[in-house]
Image 1 (cartoon, each protein chain N blue to C red):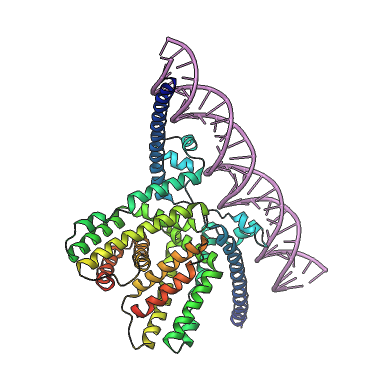
Image 2: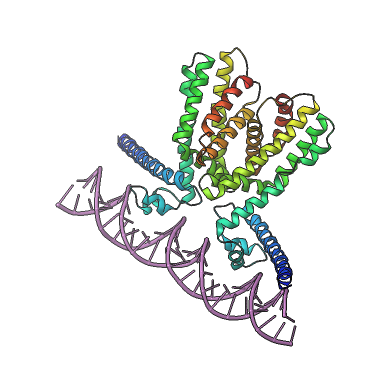
Length: 212
Length: 212
DNA sequence: CCAGAATCTTGACACTTGTCAAGAACGAAT
DNA sequence: ATTCGTTCTTGACAAGTGTCAAGATTCTGG
């Protein structure tokens, strides 16, 4: 009987703890999201915790309550960023019923991303470069890179399938190609080059049928 | 007569000034080279002028005598880095007399670069990312990117020529592909992945005949 | 309603940063 | 040898950094 009571109490306590953990985690993500704003604006090198706090509804002390240090915060940002990114094209892949439809859906999303989320993406490239110096970032970055590669591979596979073919190169090479093109277009776009986006689209439109 | 004297004096003075300028510039490059050491070690975000000075034979004040500010120094570093980089494969292109020879020469240089100059190259990717945030870097970075694209194109053209073919894709796409592969391999290599280099070589060996 | 825990604010700390200026050391022309 | 312009060193400055701890505030279970 006593054991049952303690068992029940334990369960209640556990549930409470889970709830607290969830709340804690939700807050972490809120903070990470706020941090991503400033990081996307200034880049890793120029972003300080106080700057992040000032551009958000929080005070700089809160960040140390929820994160052990700055790296911890930024790792959380990177991980959170991932979840948003890697499913970007999945709807297009799922709904397209022809090669043309897939192409146009892909290109449209590509252009929109470059246009509207340039800051988030330059941050991604920044952090991926940081991972070459800072070991703490590597695990997460490599994982995201893998997810992005898989994402591109899903598009290419579907595209090939719709044409009754198979992709002619490896997932790694395909990802390298598209990522390289995107990165280059992003830089040009940020530099004010109006032709960057249409040229990327042309290039991809030309490339797709030759690689899949 | 007086005019001739002043003319001669002017010429002497000019020569002296040119000499001083050259010396000044040589010093700038020395300093830039020293800075590149530390930048390659720590990355842009973590490198301070004092750190650069401490890892070199100079004191931190000298840098302000030769450069107007930190950005000026780093721009000089980037520009200097370029000169070293863009001719890396030219000898191979010039001397190879068959597709195999070109392939093996290219792959050997690729592997050596990844092995021995990883720090310089991660710095390049770091600075290219910085250019997405800092407008002052963009001009130089875009220019270097163009030079690297041309370098890759020279290899591909020669490779195609040796097989009596023509490259099947644009210079931009080819550069994106190889740069993307290199960047990914570099990150894996720095993360301690022993297979990164051989896998890159395999990939490139497989790719070359299909793109040219 | 109240005690104790969770959450948040504030201000301080030790340290690093880029920049600059005063002057020392040096070199070359007179 | 002296003088003058170049080159370099040193030390200081203000601003900004991550981190932390003491206390205020808010939330919550009893």
